[in-house]
Amino acid sequence: MDLAAGMPDGRALYRPDVAGTVLVLPARCRRGEHPFTAASGYRIRQEHGLLYVECLACVRLFPPRLGHSWVLQAGPRRFDSVELDDESYEQLRESLDAGA
Ligand SMILES: [Zn+2]
Image 1 (tube, rainbow, N blue to C red):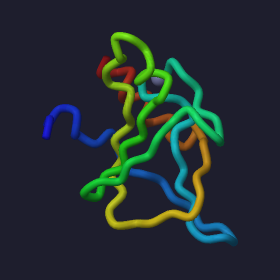
Image 2 (image 1 turned 90 degrees about the vertical axis):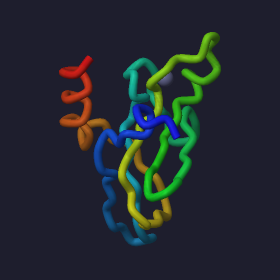
Image 3 (image 1 turned 135 degrees about the vertical axis):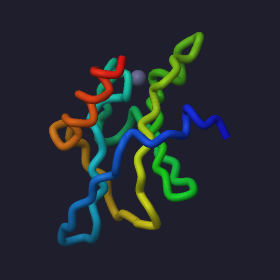
Image 4 (image 1 turned 30 degrees about the vertical axis):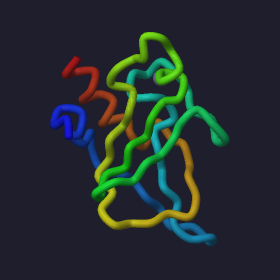
């Protein structure tokens, strides 16, 4: 596994709702270039307690953009639905910008 690429950006955020657990995701890709929509724009993979949120627009570009995937610590948690909210991840984005 590529250690640099596997370093988590932060923790995945969850909130309860009537239908179960809602996973809250950033509303834009990690590079900040592409907005996600409720229906598309991203792909979620959960592996070894990490959530990978890939930007499909970045993947389709040639050559593919690097660093487009959010890597969030999720633990064993399951979710029933997904919500997009950039505000919840503002700190995360600020630390990204500071490190860039
Ligand atoms: Zn993107």
